[in-house]
Image 1 (spheres, helix red, strand yellow):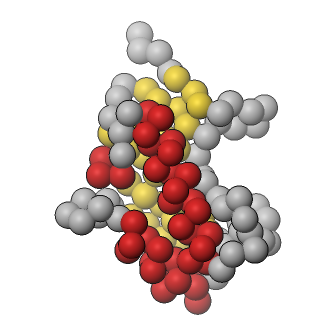
Image 2: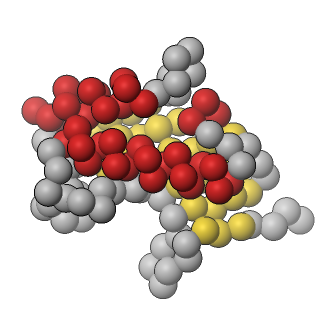
Image 3: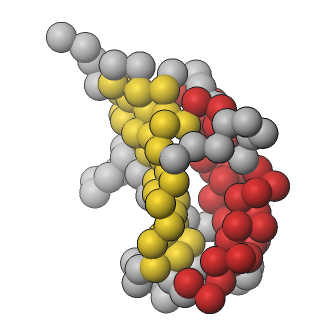
Length: 116
């Protein structure tokens, strides 16, 4: 039986679980919520980079991304940061959904699953 590795385990959730050479990230949100949607998205993507590196993978190996934006009117601002970050030739399958997030200060939350 394969072992499940959990990263940054708290009482309620872990930032990531790794199983069978796949990294499953929890929804990641910005640390500095004073930023606009582009700034918050860039922060979230930097956190995703760090978590993927800890799992021994990177953004070129993302299998699926789910993006939750608090206001679809900010879709272009989120995409500005995403487009600057996504690896050329490796844009993953992606869904973008407008949703009420856990805090009114959050503008974006991103969930990714990546192969290792």
